[in-house]
Length: 115
Length: 113
Image (cartoon, rainbow over all chains, first blue to last red; front, side, top):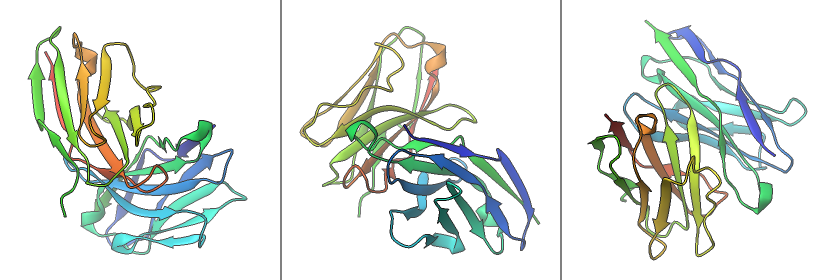
């Protein structure tokens, strides 16, 4: 069975300061891990993905995430927040549970960026 | 190129009516997913189609919900005898294969009065 926990429902930062959105997962197989972003009244967009290649994954808009198997974590970071980063972020795990890759979404973290 | 499209973008219906929601996936994508997103909530998996295999319906909340995918392309999600708790945004996503990243449509906002 697979599961994913986003440790913070809301994260508030000031513009120009670092961003850390935390995600822990559980998987019986070698998982694929994703981060998606959803801006208000917009569809979900892929930020980055991990699929057993490099453990440090770089995505769009300056975001990156590090896969740490020993900690079962896949935290999302960005060195400097922009106002345009304010959105909902979803961590997703997908493995071959039961023979199909049905992804499991976290409950989401709302990123608030203050001027 | 064209992304995933969904129609209608908004649907208001009365309790007890049936509704049909449509999803046009990206051409060539074999996997198609339906999700439901309630206000302030994460995504709830509903149903998954992969190629010509039987769909995985394990996420459908009741037998009022059904979906089909014709010709491996367009999919329709049908909700019969709608209830107020069915009000949500219904999202469709497709992927090249089941282990690839998903591409999401803009969603259909369903309001049941």
